[in-house]
Amino acid sequence: MLSLYEASCLAFEGENLLDEALAFTRMHLKDLKRDVSKSIAKQISHALEDILHHRMLRLEARWYIEAYSKREDANGVLLELAKLDFNIVQSVHQTELQEMSRWWKGMGLANKLSFSRDRLMECFFWTVGMAYEPQFSHLHKRLTKVTCLITAIDDVYDVYGTLDELELFTDAVERWDINAVKNLPNCVKLRFLALYNTINEMSYCWL
Image (cartoon, rainbow, N blue to C red; front, side, top):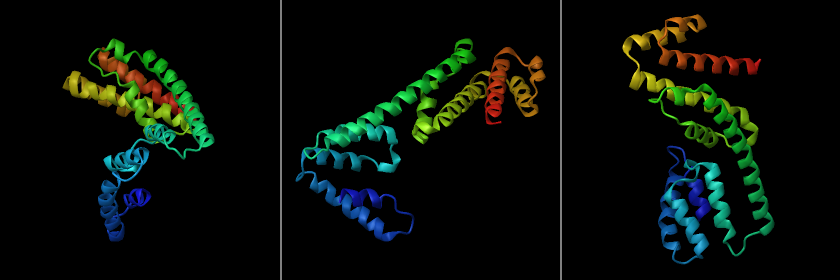
């Protein structure tokens, strides 16, 4: 019934049979929690809290490993394999984050401009939420760079920059000309150079 509930959550609009299955299983799963083992009851409560495909897969994997380990019928070999896989992928993410931390510190945006948000970890975590698999390492790092720069530039537009400064910055980005930095004030110049250097570096990597 739990599997049917999770499958029915994937219904498209107009799939009335699956909508009925969702309502039916949700109602009965709430009652079943009193008549099953603690581990299954915990799994049911977890499933009813939020839809499975709305959750972040790596966090869900970590939760399920812990929950599965408490089941009486748990397969020890399968559990050990799951833990090894999780730890291997996590080590790849840690290496990626270290590289991104060096890049972010090298940019100097957070240190030199105190009004700017320092959201490196959040940006990286967001990319892992999109695609956690280790073969997408380049995707993780490039999306982290892009989202960090978007956040930093957003702060200039929303918090710090004057209208004149923002017009100069916008013009420089549209022209994509390194010589345009001569006319930019210092805070905007740092943003433009960070954006210019990072995007050009990323584009050259694809060649």
